[in-house]
Amino acid sequence: MAGTTLPTPLYGLYREELGFSELLVTVVFAVYAIGVIATLLLAGDYSDEAGRKPVLLVALGLSAASALCFLFEGGLPLLFAGRLLSGLAAGLLSGTATAAVLELAAPGREARAALVATAAGMGGLGCGPLLSGLLAQYAPWPLRLTYLVNLALVAVACVLTWLLPETVRHPVRWPRLRPRGLTVPPGVHGVFAPSALAAFVGFALLGLFLAVAPAFLSQTLNEHNLAVSGAVVFAVFLASTAGQALLGKVGIRRALPGGCLFLVLGLLLVGASLAAESLPLLVLGAFCGGLGHGLAFRAGLAAVSAAAPPEQRGGTISAYFVVAYLGISLPVVGVGALTLALGLKNAGLVFTVCLVVLSAAIGLRVRRRPLPET
Figure 1 (cartoon, helix red, strand yellow):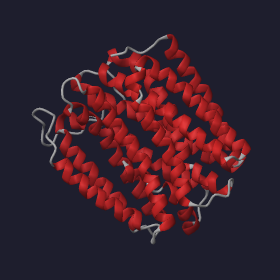
Figure 2 (figure 1 turned 180 degrees about the vertical axis):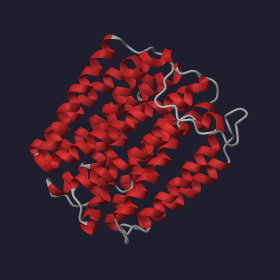
Figure 3 (figure 1 turned 180 degrees about the horizontal axis):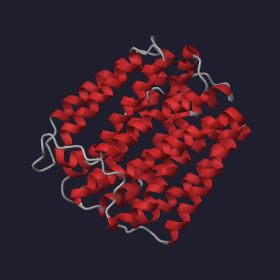
Figure 4 (figure 1 turned 30 degrees about the horizontal axis):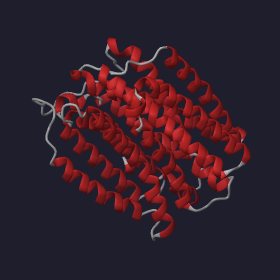
């Protein structure tokens, strides 16, 4: 998952090298989400039949191919290809790896397994910008070394994945791909809708930091240190991981409305940082918003996973991630388009206001009709 966010602090360098606008930055970023969504729709439940290990190994192969595209990048085509391949890899990993970790858990350890799965995903996404920012700022070959390191990490992950036991009984060697769209079992709808919408808002906040925050730091705050840019993005995911760790103490019923509350607070702080041009407010907004994302995202994932029948768990989790990744793509491209007419600051303010309204509405809904605790 770290490989999917490595380019975040580097977009400014790519802009200087290739000369494209902020809108194109968000489009390049969104190609990743398109790859994720397409994979989830086409093969979201493929591992339920083919087995977890083969799908995970294919995902790691796609991740390596993405790194090679960025390593040999010579223009926009390879940037788009690299982002698309990383999206395909993440699409296969998101539902499959989560289901595999849950199934590998010993009886009574499902809650710990859910934390491991979601924290690994969020932790990886956060470590990507931190790693690339540090290497680009303080090491040679700022647009190359990051991807060499990533290839080495992917190789280690392939070895570890190969050693895992298969958790799917009687996997089919080459099952036929059967696109099924966003199919959610009927009995899961009441849990799925508010959980997925909260994930949509949380991922939209992540998308803002991944695609737009580096430009805001350099163009508005005059902060050109790539390590700082990567650290600010890392703060969101660090807080998200902390929020996920709190679920066991808070409980699902309180975690989702509480997560929406922190999302609202974080978004308001991000909006205030845009208006006041303040780095401390932006960092504080990153921590609050990330904490809200972690609480809401893991509570929703745990509720959806528990409600789904075992034979449809992989597909249901993938549908949950589809809605989440729509949040990380569509609003961010909207911000990029608005920057052409309103400028970066005003586009960010419009974005935060819209998400505050949506997050508050979801929080009130789950406050009145709480999710089941188990």
